[in-house]
Structure formats: C-alpha cells, structure tokens
Image (cartoon, rainbow, N blue to C red; front, side, top):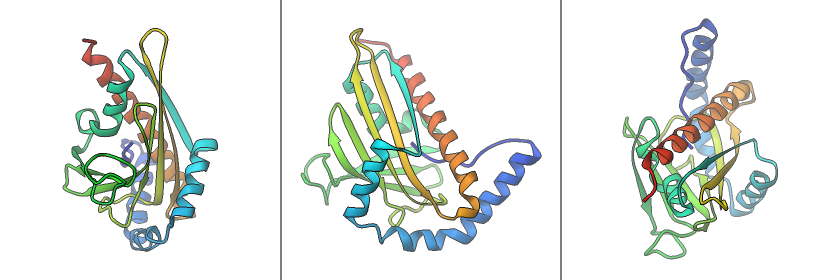
Length: 205
C-alpha cells in the first residue's frame, strides 16, 4: 500500500489538502528523527498489534492462484498503483543476501523520483509477508512516523485466492491525525481495489 494525498474539488477537500501540506512542511524533520529510534523490540510489538488490532484492514478475493497474488502484492505494485514507477529489492542486509528474505528492503520509486523503503520483517511465501516502513531511509513526503503492513493469503476450494492486509501506523502529529488516518485508509482501500481489478484482468492460464 502507498499513501497518496486526497483529491477533491469541494471546499472541505481544499481545506484538507492545505492542512496536509502544512503538516508535511512542519512535521517531516521531526518524523525523520523519530523513525531512526524504533528498535526491533518496538517493531515486534507493533507487528503484534498489526496482527491482533490493526488501525485498518481490507480484503479482496481474486480468481488467481495464491502464488500469483502473493507476488503481485509484494513486487508488482508499479503495474496497478498510481504514481509508482518501479519496485526494487536490496538484499544486502537480509538473512539470505542472495534472495528475498527477512531483512530485505523493498524500494518503491515514485514518479517524482522519491523513494519509499520498507524492510521485510515476515516472509513466508505464499502465505504471508510483512514490512516495516523505514521513514528514516525514505524520501517520500508522508506525515507518519512509521507504518507496518501485514499481508495474508489463503487459497479457496474453488481455486480463487483471498488476500487480507492489515496496517498499523502513527501519524506525525495529533493535530492532523484525523486527516492522516482518513487519507491513509482511503489509499489502502483504493490500492487494494486496483490490485483486485489488475489480477482479475489477467485471466488464468
């Protein structure tokens, strides 16, 4: 899931956009300082919260084998998500430096050249994966201190695959928390709907 600013042509949407930009301008430096302080114990606790009591979750069912769905939601976001140019992986700090594994970094490059760096913290293909968004290494303008995404996949008896994503995150400021949560949740639903449409458009071999 990627976060995009809200769009709209009403006065309310314009106000939300203005507040969003102000939040980015004033809060991003503090966000970068805080992100580097999250140790593994904190990440493990937040991962547990993501699994048990997430800030938001959504699900889809698609007419594709589980392996294809797993791969699409992990590494093919550029094919169906707005503003993403490419997806790369850096395995230099991974458990297995020769392959995608725990510790690998998923690097999402946006169409403006900015990058979102997400460290893999669970990798159990084709059943589940999770990542921690490292804002200290990322260059995108997102008003959060951190986020965790937890994805699970289940093959159905009819051959379709059910996929669920749960997320936990912390807005950079309580003053703009409502707007951030609204935008984040809308982006999550929108991106998952696009993934569903993309996967169903492929057809089955």
